[in-house]
Length: 140
Image (cartoon, rainbow, N blue to C red):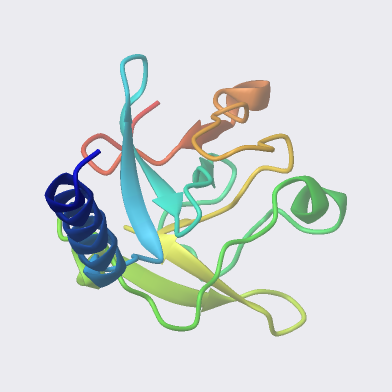
């Protein structure tokens, strides 16, 4: 390989690395699935869920105790959202015990312990009560 070609390859690799480093990481992002459409994920691309037993707009979650071990409440201190989303659609509630939880359009947000890899949606439709959070359609 010639020196010029090597230099060009290194320059392209360096520019790609710089561009990736400058790309903002959002604490709430979106993902897409052919089956589910758009849905919310956290900063490490784990799926966010809502629980139909939580009344939309309620000031507290109904998922406590063992439920909260399987479905950990989602909270981040410094919320940054993908530009496809609106920060004003997010809010914070205080759970029993004083811990905080983020909500989206009034729905408390959860992770699912059965998702072990980014972009998994194993919690979709569990017991007919748990659903990915589709920002375009918050129905079942």
